[in-house]
Length: 158
Image: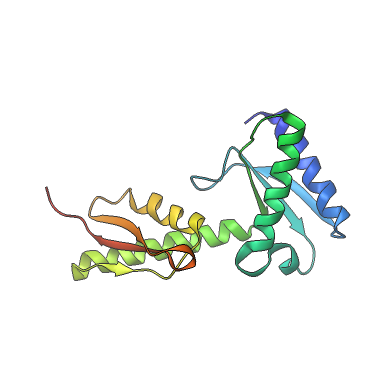
């Protein structure tokens, strides 16, 4: 992580969110999952953070896109990082990991495929990455657009 760029992105995030009318404190932390980039700007908001997060995190994804565009304009390069509000993504990632392990256990015990609910791309990525560590199961995505799901199935013995 380039600490100079990360600190500047932290400052940008603080300024944008405060300009939106929120009283915040933005801190930097290490990513907890694959695909979150080099660092995470965690936005601490007092009170109700639902407006910043949005339904299923869509507002937070839009804010992240905006900050990434500002960073790209300033640094003339893509910098891969994530935004989080009150540890929303961290908690969601932990829940997804738990869901993945439960599906893997069920697939192994029943020797049958388990189809998970439709998920966003970042959610499926967490499931695939987590279950890649378990040799007894394999994963694949199926479906299209908002109906795309992960299927967890017993691995075929070699």
